[in-house]
Length: 436
Image (cartoon, rainbow, N blue to C red; front, top):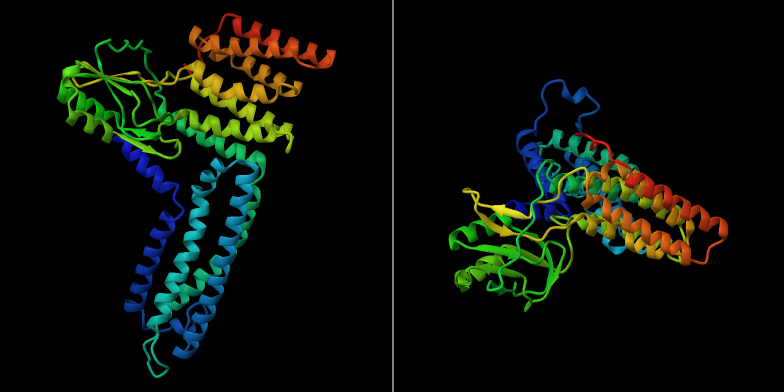
């Protein structure tokens, strides 16, 4: 249930309509409250210039002007947003658009403009004929204040969007989101356990749908396994693409694999057309890698952005190495094994972070040198063989690239020297784990 709720919450949080909808409802409720309860001014309030004290005709003209201006500004905000999303999709990658849409400040600004329009509409229609003395003075004053606030928020929004499409800021934003995913998905403490293989006579079943696994309700899977008194093996994990007729799960004993169990297991998976960061730790790493690949492409050739991404990847890996990985074995309340799931290991995470960047930067000594340097900085975190071996493998691949690459002798010597230094630091006796 936790994974499913996290998926739905992330879907709402990354929706461009959710926050504006809540703000619009609140604005409409406030308008109704002020119109029905704040028609008459208390004694002495008319002397305050902040409180509107004009006649109904002036009020209608004022609200009409405010409404027209706010609608125009809202159109401008939407146009600017579409332009920025187009630039982000072209320069940073289409998968980075999710980060712009899910930005809470962007959602709040759009929500403020939409809520102000709805508020002014509700107040505008409540004003009667010129002979009517019932005027919502406080409601009109609040509408004026909201309109003024929108004017200043527009300046802030333009400034924010201009900074958001800068490469360094975009890389930093994705890096922070990756750190949040690491803190959310990886436990702070735990002992790694070797998962047992599925028995040869286990029943194999598929998920019945094509698409990417976006989330898995592991608590529900444990409950299903308990009810069937069985053990379930998962050959897939969030982020994998599955085919409808594939073999993705194994159930033992095989006689427990009934049609009802198949249907229940299918309901525990959320499958869609794209990967999501809900339970996919590799998702944020691939976002950073995509930014680096675009920066290193011949059309852009922005080496400095690629180096920045490499630095951010080393920071993320240090955070990952400092924690145990997700538990592969899930047990019920009696500590009986119920679910054996496929989890990402350290080798897969390191390869996801550096393989494509190393390949794209094969002809760029500066990129390979930076990768070797950041691998060396991970030495204090390589406290066991599972963490150390992937780093040494990357060093070996960089050395091989340096030996066969078409580099100047000075660049080749510098690269091979950095690789030797990195290997020496990695193979030295590791100290205590940071933060322990």
